[in-house]
Image (cartoon, rainbow, N blue to C red; front, side, top):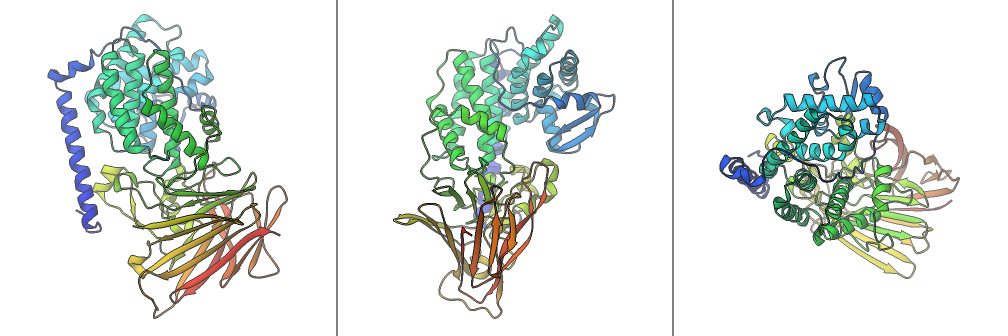
Length: 567
């Protein structure tokens, strides 16, 4: 085991490895001829229904592909006049996207006969080149699950005017993939990849004739994973709101498949959908964007609008999100969401960030203070930086992050990412008072290095006209006096549309919103500066932005007070 892991973490990692081995052994046994028959013959006589495709399509993709350019997963590959499967994948994300066939919806949206022919050629080439024995990315369980959903959702487009021989080849491949996935879904990594595999499996079982005998088994498996992954407040166990979006984009079409087959959708799954939708609304700012915590990047507004249109109870608001580790203050036109959670367990912490006690804030329909967010697939070189404390609206002590990034081969293999650990404890208390609401929270992420805690008190006026904060650097236990002063920086990253300039008072800055409103940010007991920042979550890629930074030095306990109010 890597020496950087604690004894508890080594034990956790060992349990993950043992569980993966056990699952793999079960999957191998099910692939044997003795047991494989349970999942039916790898042939398809009839397709009963077609699942919905809720993900947004881009018709321009077809033109780019016709010109020999294939853009997937944030990377573009030149395919020339050859097959898309002749290209050396520029990244694993690109390869997974290629074999998942989610891009079929783009050809379907373009809708021409040439686009249909490209789609068929790609599917037939894939069938010829990638039998199950080929293994690799193409047959990873979550990729198979995504491919099943994509092929089935685009059946009307691909099968229009098709000859019987081509129909049989594609349909029988669907049956073969379904049987293979039925035996291998347990090999999928923990978290969303396992759900992705199972949802594809259950979708295929409902859409393809003769598979009803397996529906109950796969439905039970999905319910078990949903119970483990979707928290009581509707957040996902990994704390990444983007996974909530992806999961809903899969679960809602699955629900319609049950309706189309006149089958009852499991009440646990219906309840999970309702919780997930409420959580999405809880995490929205006034401009409609989702807060950029723990791996959330640019808000996919098209997908979000589609999902919220399915919300059966939009007036039913989530009061709090203690399970997911977020707190929300909302008064008048002001909304603030705060990260008051600890990192998830190792297998779910691959996108978690060192943003303890960070917040985002909007006024009216404008985002004001936002975290730097997570970069897109084409800008993953920035990922470690984006996960650091300095990229969040919170206090950074001695240029160190409040969490530690764990890097080692075994973790990367099991988690497909680098998880974080610390803080171990975050305490939070929210009180409603006559003149407003006050949130008190503390984390111990800096205790291991400096024997110091960060305490933050946030107050929002009842009418949303003012917000104040106090950041306290205090002793973990007893009192602390350093031999030298310890520098701190409290970051307030600004949305790209906010204009920020110095006030005549050096302890103040003026913020100008798009609508012309002026707000004044003041701080006492510290040095205020306006500095460059980077918005990693911009749709155009990392873009230059600005931030207010409060800097000083702590010799032990230090208090910094700041406020935002109309100018």
